[in-house]
Image (cartoon, rainbow, N blue to C red; front, side, top):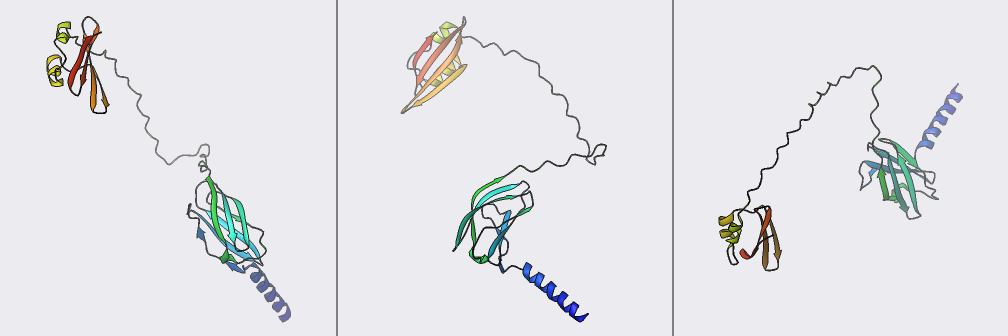
Amino acid sequence: MLLRTFFLTWFLCAVVLASEPDSSTGWMQDRPHPQVQYRFLCFRGSLTIEWRSSYPGAVTLKANVKSSGYDGDEHVVIAPGGSATSSPETLNCSAESFQITEKRFSMAAPPPPPAPAAGAKSDQPKEPVPPLPTVAPWIPPAKLVELAPAALASIHVGMKREEVLRTIGNPMSKLAIPDENELVETYRYPVSPGRTGIVRLSNGTVTEAVVQ
């Protein structure tokens, strides 16, 4: 009985010792993506890298694993909020001597939430049905007041911008183009019957007034 107990105790100790790594590191964060973590474990000269992720989508990454005696790339896929393991083929192993440099990272979209079972009652209150959109009635634009030809004819070269606006009012459209030390402006006015008057100014002074 005592001999059997001794061998059983010895066997359990051997199992525990065999499962313990020769050397290991704590969990370290991937600098570009801190929700991905990894750690190094050495078992009898062989390296094992454990990975874990708290991202909601599946993570795929390519990382360079390097030490004084090893330099290689690892391709790792980590399930959403899960873990993964990779085992580079190393000849000797010291966990503290390894370092990782991320080379490529991608993350899939999070999986959709599970559909509710048929007939299941939802605790969420139903959202109110939005009202139907209403369309405002179309209102025709007001007809522009046309200038008499004589009004535009009163605008002459040399007049100032303020005088033009006092005489015939604001234009229906205005275009201003800065050009080095000059500001060129073009004013357009409706002129009866159905024509367009154009007043051009340079630095606030009229240079041309014509009817087209």
